Image (tube, rainbow, N blue to C red; front, side, top):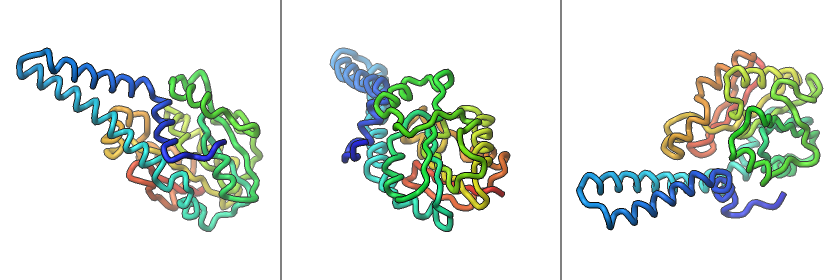
Length: 251
């Protein structure tokens, strides 16, 4: 895994969602060309609205992506100390859903620990083109184990910490997320914890990503899933206005 560059996070977002950004550029070009042709204030108003919307998505979402993935503490890992405060650090399970650009960097940060990487990718359910591109850009590391979301190849009560970073939202139904938490509960030792970092379906992500915020889940939905599985949230904080971290323990 190559070191992260100053713009690598933003450029990864562009590569994974290139169709949307290409469409925005095409709209801006079309608006610029048509503005010299059309007449009538209503047409000009419609063009202005279309151009403003495309420009807002193009530049606004790229600015936010650069802030989150290149400029914030997300991949500098300063926040992980708060997330792990008071926890045993012998054995970790790192879970992703087909896109892993951070497990090795985090393992290096944590030092000499037990480390298992699980890939929950399901090609029949996770059919978005962006996920398939992500797997080509960031293929699973050699030590990665394929793992259905509800049947992990991990020992019962064998982990101190389970990490789900920008991954568990790929389970689209609340029942799938409940099953993921239930399997995590089986694999945790007494006193262990789960660390979840996710975008939320909230105002901040709507303003940043428009309709794309519907790909995420609301805080209420997350709480319902983990409480149903028998977890309680012992800490919660944000990494930028767009990423929220939840620290969970068995209730």
